[in-house]
Image (cartoon, rainbow, N blue to C red; front, side):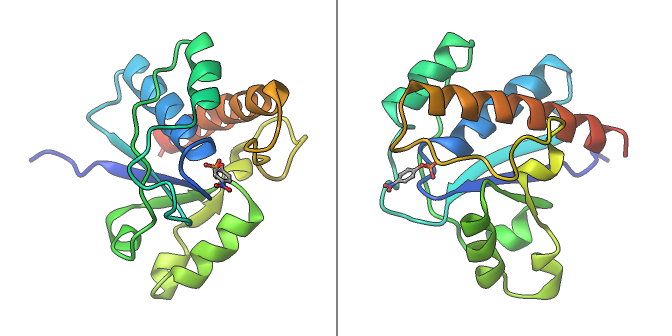
Length: 159
Ligand code: 4NP
């Protein structure tokens, strides 16, 4: 029988910058390592105002320069996500607190972690919101996500 896939949900505010970038980066890393049969990735936002939209043009352009094609369409976090996913990864403290408040029970709450729990650089405790930033903000998001996705995949793959 096929082993059940380990499902990871990346969560930010609008699901048009940080979490769809994490989604795309992680999917590429999983494919590169030949692990597509073991992991499934999705992303969502705590705010639903951008639902249905592709990632922000700036995020897509910066990601494309590094070879990532971001095709996720924004959606809001849904209560069923807490049952569906094994790991729910918040980009910052606000997303973390919102997810904790939405979690229907203790088992669901235990699935929530922070993206920067997996950082190897120790320079940031959250992934800064790039929405009102310049180009540097988007490059920083990609730097932080590449590092923490790599480390997350290493640690989950060891289990
Ligand atoms: P994200 O960025 O949470 O990384 O997708 C933002 C997207 C939209 C808004 C803020 C942050 N907004 O205010 O609409």
